[in-house]
Length: 246
Image (cartoon, rainbow, N blue to C red; front, top):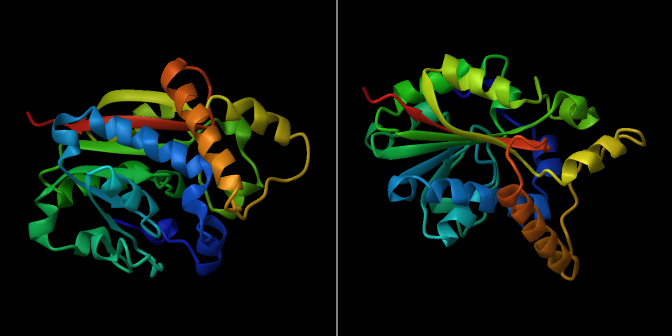
């Protein structure tokens, strides 16, 4: 299920997950948007599994908000000790114990499926191996016109529009509950950036004082994504889907 295309190399991990990246505005804002999506589900999503969790940054943030969240990562990623007992690395999600898989009610695929040629096949296998799931939440990079060297470096197959995200989930046999763009304010900035130099591929975590600015901007992006219409173009998209329980 977790094909090699989703597995980051050590260089990609170093670029995408440098120490302190959990304080970056993009990380903080996206995590709160995902937390809101989980809060909209019965029982706050029940037991949650993030597949392709990297170093467990989202798992840690969600657990801090009292979500019953775990993570699994195909690569042999370094995970902070504070979250290590909730994250399994160097493991295909199919290899987790059957007893645990049977307890999972919600699966998170956060910026994962853009790395796959056939994401619907991955999602279909998740439904097969996790028989008790009720919901799946996916986030993806959005809008083809924003394609850049960043997407090429991280081996993306595509950037999504809302129609493409709907079709992917439908092909996997899931029913769409919600789909929307977010990070609307970043969209014109990224369009302008394409007119200049190439996009930086190594993310830069904020320092001690810059973290305060990042926290403030993250709050602005969160408000942007909750107050503006989901159909308005953004740099990312989110979908909530559910399994047809018959």
